[in-house]
Length: 187
Image (cartoon, rainbow, N blue to C red):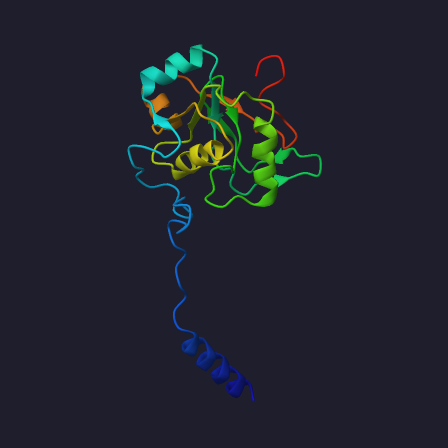
């Protein structure tokens, strides 16, 4: 009897055909859906590409620096704080909004992004980055632009390039789900 069940299961699996791999890009939006750590293009829809010198200028100015590195194996508490499996270092002055660079945002992360940017002026300078060769930052620029922001820059070298040029990194905790990046006074 077990041989019959095994044979039936094997037959069903063979008839189903090989598993289809997940596509790399969403056919409707063009956003990257998988293999986020891979070479990225030189430009991004919805933003302008900048290099290290421009990033240092933005860091000294009023730009929002947003690190979008994922938080692998994270948990979210009921109160909206993050439980992390590993520490994360970023560029000094940046805020960390993990998971907003996924190709498809789940409802909780989409609301997190909306809330974080809710009080910000739509033309405030924003610099988005991750690590080098990180599609999450490429995706995140487009997620932010889709919310009406017009002054977005993308630093594709990310924390890797920053650190490679001898600049320090600092330990950071993610912005809680209820956190905001701007207040009514500062925009």
